[in-house]
Amino acid sequence: MSIYDVTIIGSGPGGYVAAIRCAQLGLKTAIIEKYNTLGGTCLNVGCIPSKALLDSSHHYYDATHHFEKHGINADGIKVNFKQMIDRKNEVVSQTCAGIDFLMKKNEIDVYTGFGSFKDATHINITNKSKVTTIESKNTIIATGSKPSTLPFIKLDKKRVITSTEALSLKEIPKHLLVIGGGVIGLELGQVYSRLGAQVSVIEYMPKIIPTMDGMLSKELQKSLKKQGIKFYTSHKVTAVNTSEKEVTITADDKKGNPVEFKGDYCLVSVGRRPYTDKLGLENAGVKLTDRGQIETNDQLQTNISNIYAIGDVVKGAMLAHKASEEGECVAEIIAGQKPHIDYNLIPGVVYTWPEVAAVGKTEEQLKEAGVNYKVGSFPMRALGRARASMDIEGQIKVLADANTDEIIGMHMIGARAADMIAEAVIAMEFRASSEDVARSSHAHPTFTEAIKEACMAVDGRAIHS
Image (tube, rainbow, N blue to C red; front, side, top):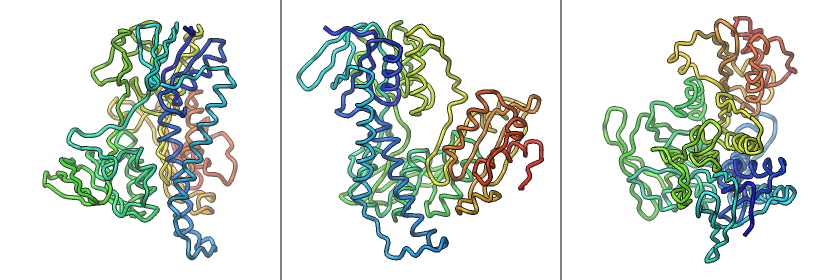
């Protein structure tokens, strides 16, 4: 029987990063993955394929809506949807192959099969009818999450689909109904809207991306509405029925009146749930919370001292980069180091166009907590770089402590916000004040000048607005 210092169950961005860091620290490491490719949801049916389709559809949308203004005649452009899906698959294959390479490079043993606990130090790996048992001094559970649904919805995965099926459709929907106005629903909704589908988003809450700052929700809905996406907020879905080629959604509107929506596909995007099915947690004595998450302490350690859990199976935002941070953190804890994660500084991003990104506290949270704060904002349309590229939608909002001027939140919507948010994270990691950033030189012309200007606006001295 093989014996390991650390075994990781799950090879997503939490699991494979944890494995690499463990190996770097001199620990004999194994990783178990039930699918034939490594990378988990993120690389196979999540972050990477969705961004590939977002980029492809963005090129098409630009060509058909903006090229003429740039002086480029692009008559006759058509979508080859099969090629678009094929390219997405190539991106996924290349990325997953990169993880294979990293496992070999770091001398990590890879087991293909379903991992489950025999007891706290032994793991059974089932591959078809063959069962292999290994011994592990420490185990990291990194099994991620699966799409959630509503109790009355039957996911047939043909007409009523999750994000997984939406990434590999055989045709562009005529009318895509999206239940849920969160990140996944909006990103995939925009993909198909760009390609010609009518898209209707039905959201239970009064606003889309409801956990983010209200400014972002308002600005993103305004932008996507201009692109043709229809929104029905404060609508409670009560039934979803299908026929051979049609889906009918019944919902109660904000006044409680029943309304119907008809389309040829329905994307159910109501969040994700921790995936701990058949892990044999009871054999190891690992406890779950009442929300189905694995219970951990501040060290990401379960109630069983040699078993840890990271990523979507534990509390907190279900984000790939959060899982990666936790993977590195646990590896270092097992190796005897003392790492730390500041969860307040884990950024959130929506990869629509305009992109949305945020870190720290929202204005709503600060008001609720009674924090005395200052606000500075700056519109993207005031930037020369934004006008040059015709990406003038959006703004950046900076929230700073009224007494110390420390930046406590930054919220942005606009071109390249997903990349620009890193500047905010770095500034806040080093506890910068808005004055610190305002005094830092930013290259001209760039989108990041908007961050400098928003920080200057905290004290009412933005130059270009």
